[in-house]
Length: 225
Image 1 (cartoon, rainbow, N blue to C red):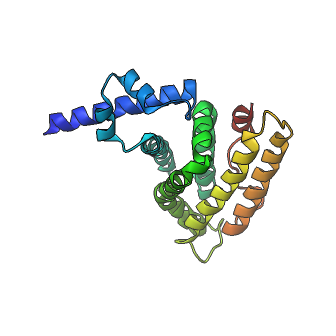
Image 2 (cartoon, rainbow, N blue to C red):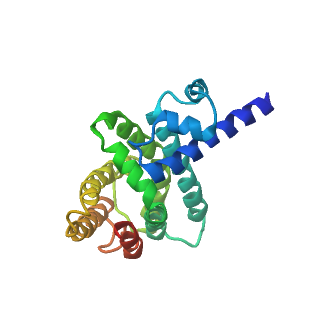
């Protein structure tokens, strides 16, 4: 039984790796299921044994990436030398650095997520982000309250609200980023929007002004290049 499960996982990983490469090189919309199965060298029936659709495959790919990011972040957050603000900023910085390193994947995701046909996919991705990230953020918020740097009466509930708020920031970012080639001035608008959202998060948490950063400007420059 263990051998069969391993083979299943290996084949699924093969599909995900092939799809990621094709999405990068061809674009999400231009990559068909047939293109994916030709690259993997299997039948269409085998593909549908693992995934209901191309959107389902993308969903699995995002899930894998999200889990990889969070595992990396949680290892760093175990450092007892880090205070709550440092840990929260580390979460944002790690996410920003991943986006800078995987800029092509960000373009693929935005292309897919903001296609009108994929509203459900976007909702599922948002829900997963909350499930994965909220418990980590809640621990950080409790630590910040204990340290006296955060002031909120709702430490167990505000994490989800913050994450939902950040998804609104992502919506604005996506709209500006996707039009960046035609409107280079959007770069300044993105920076301004990020600074506004940093300020709003400080108010949510009762944190000192200027303490929350959504990642370094260096990482942002790499994403916006």
